[in-house]
Amino acid sequence: MIRVIIERKIKKGCVDEYLELIRRARKQANTVEGFIAGELLQEKDNAHHAIIISSWENNQAWDAWAVSEIRLQAINGMRSLLESDETVTILENSNILA
Image (tube, rainbow, N blue to C red; front, side, top):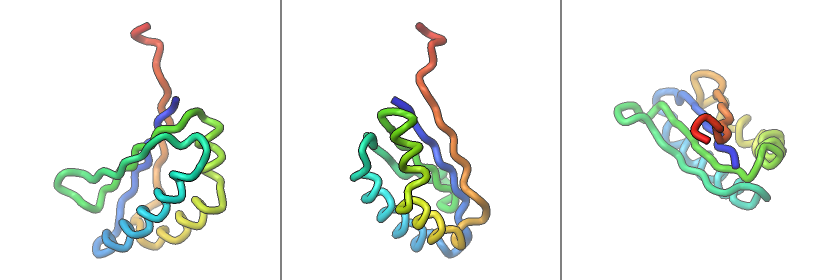
């Protein structure tokens, strides 16, 4: 299993529109093979700093979603709402404590 963290900075006045788009994208991700779960978080005192944490069965499942037409359309639809491009971090289990 992997976890994917997506960080986005939303422009002032665009949070509600962003939330509508991201809710639709999440519903679509729910139908993708290999998607386990996802949650949308925001910085405690800054609603314009959005973090998405999703869990995927493996890298291949995430990679397929990352380049899917559905996701690319969602990203293009929200691009004008963002201050900058999103950052994506992929995490996997560590063997440090094994």
